[in-house]
Image (tube, rainbow, N blue to C red; front, side):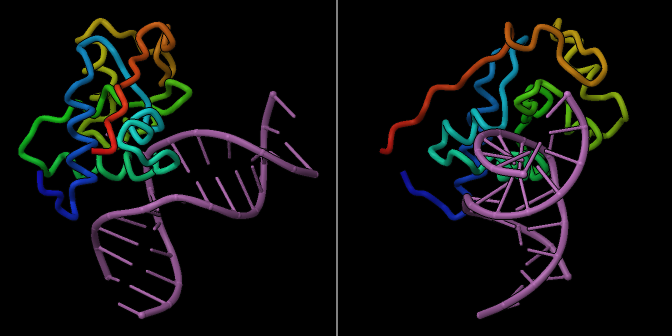
Length: 113
DNA sequence: AGCCTGACCTAGG
DNA sequence: TCCTAGGCCAGGC
């Protein structure tokens, strides 16, 4: 498989696309899954670029390690992120996911293939 | 080519 | 417990 310079973003998208409906994950977990622990900022950056991607990337299922909707302001509406989560039976209170630890989903770490 | 920014995380005071 | 600083690495100017 060829790896383009923008492969970093595509790896992030692949992880996010694998998040089950009704579950959420964190930027750090994604960064760890792509073999770049500590590069959690890049994950958020990839999310910002994801909206220009033709693929539907459920960025609303990605939150920070506190379970807070830090990226909600980047969605079209002011409350879009929360509404999307509510549509998946995820409750958000005060910009924070309720029972975050219960619905937290950790992606599998990709091999160094 | 160099500097600044960023949807984060961890550690130290 | 709150606040500050540093690190991470890719993109934009």
